[in-house]
Image 1 (cartoon, rainbow, N blue to C red):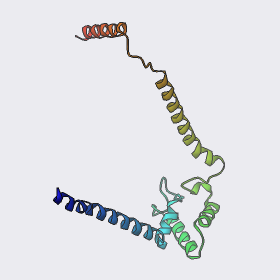
Image 2 (cartoon, rainbow, N blue to C red):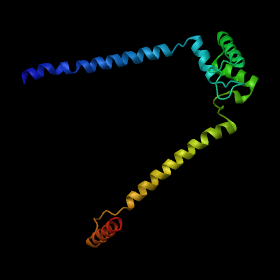
Image 3 (cartoon, helix red, strand yellow):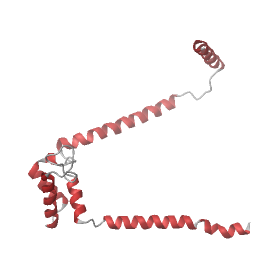
Length: 163
C-alpha cells in the first residue's frame, strides 16, 4: 500500500504533459492566426467573392483572368490600407451584389438565408413539445391482467400466421 501511494503522483505526469502540450498548441495556433500574411488575407477575401466568369468557383479558386484581376485588385487595396469591408464594397459596386459568395445581411437576401433556419428551429421545437406532451399522456399504471391476455392472444395469432 505504501508503494502505491508513492507512485500516485507519477500517474498524473502523462496527463499534465498532455494538457501542457494542448495549451501550448492552442497558444501557438491563435498567435499565428492573429497576424495573417498578405497572401493569406488576399486568399480569404477572394474566397468570399465569386468568380465572375466561372460556375461554382470563388475568385480564390479560379485561374480565370477575371479572378486573377480580382485577386490583384484585393492585394493592391490591402496594401493601400483598405479594410475587408471596404474592399468587398468596392467589388460589389463594380460587379453587383451577385459577386459575393454570402449574401449581404439585408433585404430579400437576409430572408432567404434566415427563413429556412427559423423554420428548422420552429419544427424542432414543435417536435420537442409534442414528444413531451405524448410522454406525459403515457399511462403510469402497469397493464392489467385482461390487457396481458389480449396481448398474448394477439402474439399467438401472429405466430400462427407467420408459421
